[in-house]
Length: 353
Image 1 (cartoon, rainbow, N blue to C red):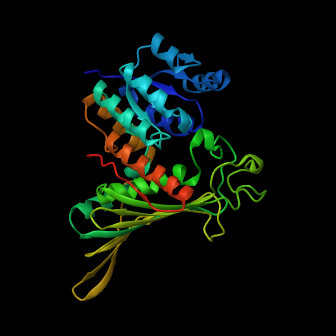
Image 2 (spheres, rainbow, N blue to C red; image 1 turned 135 degrees about the horizontal axis):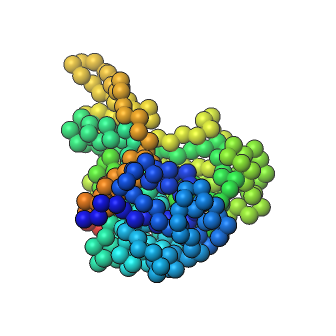
C-alpha cells in the first residue's frame, strides 16, 4: 500500500485552484501533486508555478505516458468528464471527477463499468455531502427520527447569480445551466439523505427569461448574447416507494435572496431544514424545533479531498459511488428530456446501489 498518493490534476481552472489543490496540500505527506494537464498551457504553467507542481502537460494522455500517477482530480467542463475519466481509469488511476458525472446516462454508465473493470475508485465532487449539517442530519435520519420520508423539497436559487466567467452558460460544453450546475448539488444531497430511493417518473420545465438580457450581475457580468442554457429549471420526481421531490433551481430569478441552497425533508415522525439545520417534531403533546448547538467547522471541500485521499490509500469506496452517479444522471437528463417534450418521463432503468 502506497504511503504517499501521487496526484495529477486535469484542468487548471478555478475549481482546481480554489478547491482541489489547497485541500490536497492540507493532507500533508499523504499527497504529492506531481503533474497538471490543461489545453491552455499558460493556465497550466501558472497553476504549476503557484503550487510548485513539477510537471506540466497540454494533454492528460501525455501526462499519463510520462509521469507515474496514482489518482487524479478531473476539473474540466462537463463535456470532457467522460473521456478524461475513462482514460484515467485505464491508466490505473483512482478518479475524483467534478460533478455532474457526465453529459449522458450512457456515459455515466460506461464510467461506472470502467471503474469496476479497473478495480479503481471513481467518485464525484458532490462536496455538500461532507457538510457537517448533512452528516448530522444523516445520523438523525438513520436513527428513525424523521420516520418515513415521503416529501422533499430542493432549492438552488440565485437572484442574479449567472457566472460571469468560465463556460457555465455554454450548453454544448456544460449540457445545461443551473439544474446541472448548482441544482445537482442539492438534488444529490437530498437523495443521499433519503437513501437514494429508486426513481419512477420525472417531470421538468425550463425557462430562459433573464439570461439572454443584459442586467445586474452579482457574480460578474455574463455574456447575455451567447447565453445558451436555461436560467431556471423546475421539476418533480416521484419514487417507487411512493415518496416525491420538488426541485427549483435558477441562476437568475426575481426572488428575495441573492443565493439560497437548501433541502427540506418531511417524514411522518419529523421534518428538517438543512441550512441552517433544524428538525421539526411533535413530542409529549408539544410541537418542538431542534437545533444543534455545535457542529464541526471543517470545510466541505477539505473533508471531501481528505476522504478521497484516505480512500485511495486504504482501498475503500468514498460515500459518492459510481452507481449513484448513474442514477443522478438519469434524473438530470430525464428532467431536461421532459422539459423538451412537455410531458413526464418514465425512468425505466434501475441501478443497484
